[in-house]
Image (tube, rainbow, N blue to C red):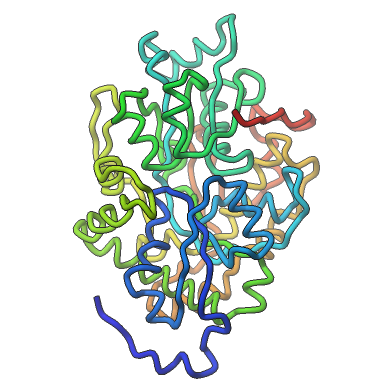
Length: 400
């Protein structure tokens, strides 16, 4: 691994705070943060990154808001919920420093449903609409990406996620145990926990998140806005380090494999390599006998396209909060995104480490239900869906 001179850190670009506490959850998409901290990339930019594994997204949220964590590997939607004061916590100005990845989450169903022949979207919709106790689905955080992918996918199958099923919160690493105990009928979570459930015989993967939205936004590197404003050089150096690590991981399949080997350690994901490596490489087995290489698998870099904090990505999560009643009123979608997404800081950091930046901070995407999202009309987009909760009180979401 090449190193660069450190003379510049003694000048005006020196990190104001050279030792940073960085939160992460045990998920494959924390890879670039772990690699940056442990493989010399942070040191090249004058930083020491102290990794702090968290047991739940709620814990990570609270520590990020309080400043106990300087920055974190974070759910996109969690950042916006915290910024807007959704979920019973005070609004706290937040910053998205960069995107960490796209794709690579999944919706799994239980062995019990598999035995009943519920192995397709059509069979699930039929089962849900039959009389009887509603099915229970778990996601990882009420305003997180997994809740939004689960809700969006269910709605695309004419299943109302707030009325036709129960939705509960379970930490990602505990999904398979809850399936095995019969507490939940399915879940949406990040890897490697979907793959791990399949490997343990605890059900099958019914849909990937990239089948809902190819190259969708997922985790971000986030901080309180006060951190980015008080320590701009540290924030910029952090983005440089993580960008360099992201580029390194995607330089070759061998680098992805070595990253999987690193992640399986007890300090990080603490799970067997075979649960991590295949889907990190884009190789999927769904537990129903199907195998494929997914061309929209985990993207940590993609020549910087996975990392720009697009304004339209942040706006999309707010449209879904409005759609499902988590926001009672429409926010200033573009204005809020411009506050949260740290585009200028990101572009400075990317330019410094020779990572190309897309010209536009908006992008256009076609989702599973045929809707196109480009950020041009968030108010209309939030109201364009047949299934929604506009005007309805948010459904109760309790943990198990």
